[in-house]
Image (tube, rainbow, N blue to C red; front, side, top):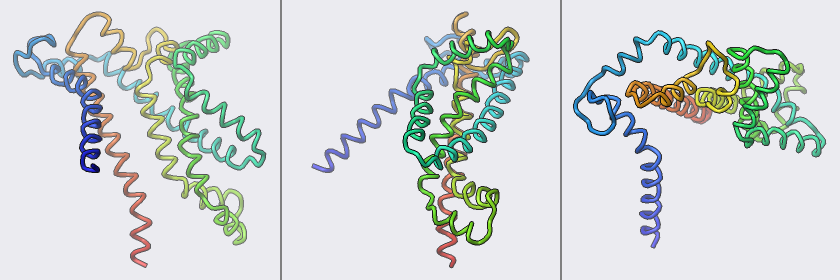
Length: 269
């Protein structure tokens, strides 16, 4: 009976992953099609990848996308870490619960509403739509993600560590830099990578707050897809997907190394 359940669960997982990855693999397969369509594969070619790398405007958009993603991830990680620490050390349950609720509402709110709200805000504030508006928007919706990733590590940390550091004469800054931040480092890395991924992936919010002369990959792919089917979109999407896979694998190995290192030290002692 258990073997039957095990087989059934594996078949279910295979079916789920097939539904998720089949369209991506289909898109990647036809990015090498010399026929110029996704109806029939006529032959292998790298023509559309050459088009991507020879398109100067597209390369600038790629650079803009990664600059926005890295800056927003870094800034939102710094703000989110200190925000999570502030929420964690609030003694009263009512304001603490209110702040957590407000933080979670921003995560589950529809992107269309967030994007429209930012558009109205920037218009009223007189901020020109472009690099600045996109960066501020990405920082804003990434901060709650970082808070959610860091808070569990703070909750795992024993208060005796901080008490011991203070008994040894550590100042507030030393407690933060030598005890708290090293302990929650896995959560900080997780928050940074999640913020980076969300920024690279975001379309709805960016679509509202981007202006003329500035664009990101998600908005550019959308605008090109509306003009008609072009396999250069397939090539570009394939490159983005492979880059995302590299990021995920890199984060996996970093996280694995951080988890194994304490055990190795204990074993050596």
